[in-house]
Image (cartoon, rainbow over all chains, first blue to last red; front, side, top):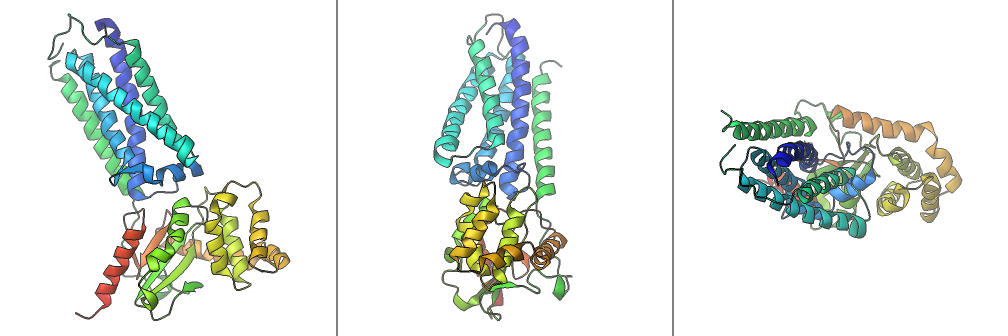
Length: 149
Length: 221
């Protein structure tokens, strides 16, 4: 990624990550409290969030989403300030989230036959982040020094 | 200063996430354990209409449920698993708490009460949960409820007329008022001997653990 593009795109990525972080935080709270009243009346939400696929080893998938979005936000922020390794970790995090999103979309479409709108929102965010990574594929720039701008 | 700025930004966002998540969790968390200051008539099991089990059972489980809520359906499907091994020690009570954002929940509750007027509440209760996926998205669930009434051998014309009557409506509203007074916001909400199971969501293991604990508390040392 060249430095000028990075100066624009990493802040954009960080803001997008914040939207994902808010979505995942809300879903985590829903999972932990058993809230059933705030899914906007969409039954698909209950079917997805109440399914066995919504937890991994007892941990809500949404909680893992919080960690992933926070990690992506952190890497995007540090990348904006010139930390070269943060760019690499940002790409790795986004592609891991992208792979997980594909799996979760498959589960919703073909196994549960129900969609949760919050999960779809998160999927859209991750597609956007993946798009940003694709647009800026080159991680190294000689101008950038490791350890800050 | 610029060197530390990314650390500051990340720390602020991390802190904001934790604080917001905690506040949201506290706002949505059920407001129990239930107060011991409730009078007998205010308790979850007072004046219960729909009871399975013996009156002198050591443990009383009260469920505030919504027929259109999928977690309630799952719990109903696992009811045999929950009750297994407890025999006459467990009494189960069902109360209505149809959520407003479930567009057919209120009608389903009325249907179960209309069936009760002909002595078949629990049969309709089980059928509504079992067939939840079928009527959940139906445009006209009443037609399906009438079919269920026919399947159960009820007088279908009377069932339809009872569904629109004031008596069944009053019964559902009465349960809802009681649930609201107890601070209920979500379904299923379960009380074991007047103590609410928290945190939600309740599952088979959680309910059984609460029953076991209540039984232990009742048994002599």
